[in-house]
Length: 247
Image 1 (tube, rainbow, N blue to C red):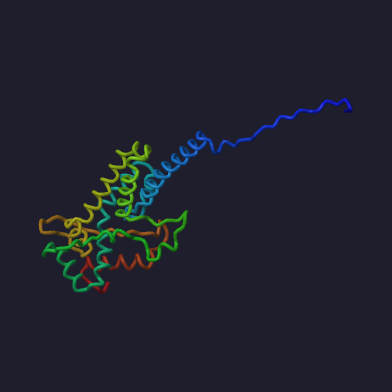
Image 2: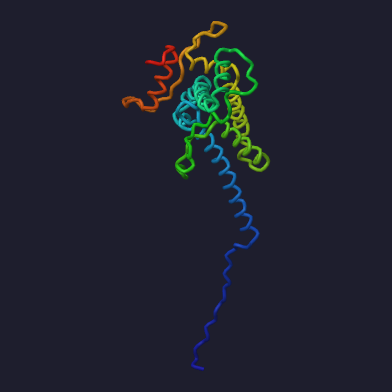
C-alpha cells in the first residue's frame, strides 16, 4: 500500500548428507581401512615386543638395522637355551626329587626323560605382577610362544578379509616359520642337555665335544657395578665350574 515492493524470499533446505548412501559407503570404507591398518600395527607391536631372551626385544634390534637384527636372531638361537636352562632349574627346584633326577640325567646324557624339560612357560621372563606396571606406553617384552600364537591367530582371522595382510603374507609366513624353528631348536632334548651341561661346569660330552661357558645377561652397562643378583648368579656358575661351594 506504501508503494514498496514486497521482498521475495527463497527457502533453502540444508542437508548434511550423512544419511545418503554415498556418505554411508564412504564412512564404512574409512572404518574398514582404519581396521585393516590397525591389524598391521598390532602385528608389528607383537613383533617389536618379542623377547629374544638375551636382553633386547626384536623391535630394538630392527631399529638399529639389518646387522643387529641378524645378531638378535643368532643370540637367541645360541644363548636362548642357557636362559631356559636357568628358568627350568628354578621351576624344577620346587620339586626337589624330580629336579635332581631330571637335571642330572639330561646334563650327563643318561636316562630316558619322558617329558619335556624346557616348557613354553620358561620363555616368560616377565616379573610377577607385571600387569600392574604396564600401560599404553609401557610394555614388558613378550615371550616368543605368546608372539607366535598371537601372529597365527591374527593372520588366520584376517586372511580372507584384510588386503593389507595379504600383501605381506609371504613375510608373515616366514616370520612365523622362523619363530617356530627357534622354539623347536631351543626346546629340543639336545639343546636342553647341552645347556644344562654348561651350567653344571661340564666341558666334554660323550662324543668329546667341548662345551664351555654359560650366558649371563647383565644390566650394569659399561661403568656400573653388577647388581647383587647378577653377582650371585656369577658366583654360582663359578662354583659349579670349580666344583666347590666355598668360593
